[in-house]
Length: 138
Image (cartoon, rainbow, N blue to C red; front, side, top):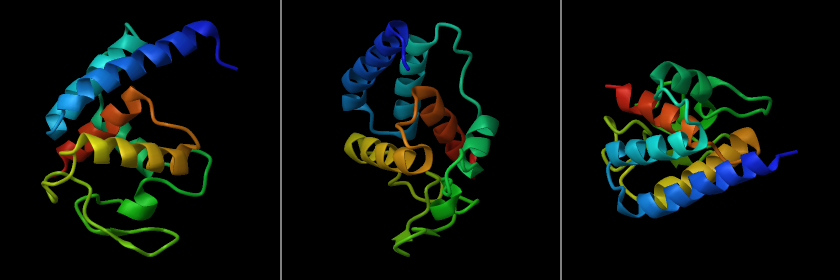
């Protein structure tokens, strides 16, 4: 069960995200926003990691699905939804410049996909690591 400190830190991060994401329209803007939120949750935050992001992206986290289940292990390639078969455009911004350009879409899909993979929302650290990994793909 979450203690009061964890709840307050989560609420603080949510507030930071909600106030700063309104202006985010590039992948780097989102990364900066997630960095601010991660620092609000953990004063010892040391930065995002493409390696951690890739590991997170490919892992199942105790459920049947990983991010790669639908987006493939190469996010520069088109994917396919694991249960519906619906085509999914490449996730990496280098392969699809429309990715990570709309706050509404980014937060909607992070919320939905993290819930599918983790059975909860992703933390700012997890979002930042994933985005750092995706931005490193050329």
